[in-house]
Amino acid sequence: MPLRVGIIGTGAIGRDHSRRINNVLTGAHVSAVNDVNVEQAQKAVDDLDLKAEVFANGHELIQSNAVDAVLVTSWGPTHEEFVLSAIAAGKPVFCEKPLATTAEGCKRIVDAEIATGKRLVQVGFMRPYDSGYQLLKNALTIGEIGDPLMVHCAHRNPEVPESYVTPMAIQDTLIHELDVLRWLLDDDYVSAQVIYPRRTRFTHSKLADPQIVLLETKRGIRIDVEVFVNCKYGYDIQCSVVGELGVLNLPEPQSLLVRKEASLATNILTDWKQRFIKAYDVELQEFINGCLNSSITGPSAWDGYAASVASDACVEAQETGAIIPISMADKPSFYS
Ligand SMILES: NC(=O)C1=CN([C@@H]2O[C@H](COP(=O)(O)OP(=O)(O)OC[C@H]3O[C@@H](n4cnc5c(N)ncnc54)[C@H](O)[C@@H]3O)[C@@H](O)[C@H]2O)C=CC1
Ligand SMILES: O=C1[C@@H](O)[C@H](O)[C@@H](O)[C@H](O)[C@H]1O
Image (cartoon, rainbow, N blue to C red):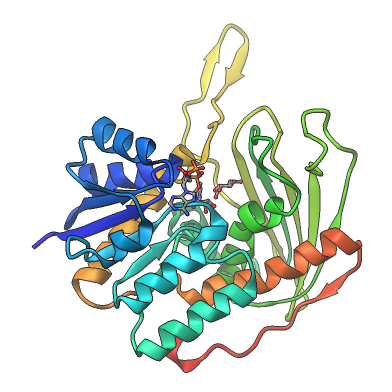
């Protein structure tokens, strides 16, 4: 019996995940959709030929007998209520990042999930499923470059809308590095600082762009992440790990090298849909398989909480200009 998935939020990624569930992955189909913009939900059903029921309210979708599992792909500030509602209904829920926009909100989700006694939540941290990051992880695991000492990252988007403001550079964008670097380094953060270079003329009054985030880990690794969301030239994710014996660089996405007319050229991707298309497929197939086997194993609510603890500190660092300490509680055995 295929898994019947209900999707809350039929915007960019809600549509993309609907497409992949129905047309790429196995074992599931989209049975229900909801969006505050109901016309948009209906348009997703029509455009993608979803054969899904349109619900006027996300909580009614969660309660429906036509829904076995829930995907939350609405705006970040709405995630906590829907994830808590799915947990209360005893239904597995895949929540796009961020799990909640504050650590406090994530902790409410952690506590609610632990109270049920079983894993129900997977968070949409797709980078650990990316083949390039897995090459980095494997090389670090075998000690290819000795102990990691420093990490240099860049998270560049071509442009963002006027609704995208300074804290979102952390809560919506840097949250990916905050998660993947914990996993990559098997380490946690102890401090955060944010510095502001000269602003690009392509930003707006409510967005400091670019930003540089400086992090330190428990093992003393120093990390710098450039967050530049109006870089204009493309969607460009860089990660370079410097160790005692050498340097590991995240591979560039595969792209043809064209030698022609005294030029050597290759393309740069322009958005996240293509840059991580395989990672999205793998993470969601893992979620579907987990639901069918009653064993959710992907990035957990604790991972969402841990990333948000660091995210909260980075937002405080944005506001104060100070170096903000980060302290993490021990991971509950429930998530071991
Ligand atoms: N993992 C990744 O790489 C990516 C993750 N995301 C995450 O996915 C979420 C959605 O992002 P996008 O699709 O880019 O945004 P979007 O704005 O294209 O779509 C969000 C949709 O949610 C709907 N919505 C808002 N509040 C709602 C509510 N209370 N109930 C029902 N629907 C509601 C909006 O009407 C909109 O259609 C965000 O949390 C974002 O951080 C987005 C892009 C990539
Ligand atoms: O999660 C994503 C977006 O929500 C976010 O706005 C972008 O900055 C990220 O690159 C993308 O992966």
